[in-house]
Length: 140
Image 1 (cartoon, rainbow, N blue to C red):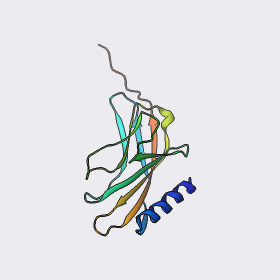
Image 2 (cartoon, one colour):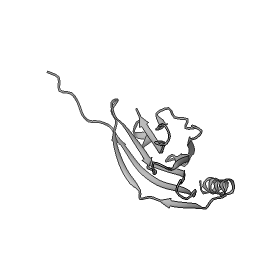
Image 3 (cartoon, rainbow, N blue to C red):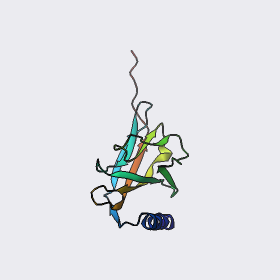
Image 4 (cartoon, helix red, strand yellow):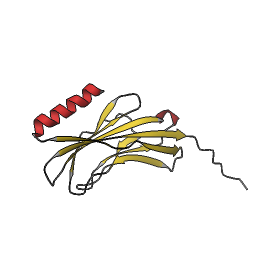
């Protein structure tokens, strides 16, 4: 995993010719109750004027997928939250998932800043706990 991240950082530095700043945000804890009408999402916000370059997600099993610009997530219940520029940010949605999706997800967002043409890599871990719903409708 560290090797993959190092390659990404090296490629970004070599191709862009810019200084890369790494930002580690605080971990977040999310609780999701399974229901057909509920979904949840994780995201890293960015400034309105900045441009998202890449978005990667690391699943609890350590496998990393590119979500943007090339969508390569293999599970159809986990998806990139699409938007038009300049509103595109690094966000992943979950729908119709089960308790096996509980675990720590990590988002890696690479952003080109319009103010000084610098590049930043922002990382954030999300601890997702998926639980079964014990809600039942009372029949009359």
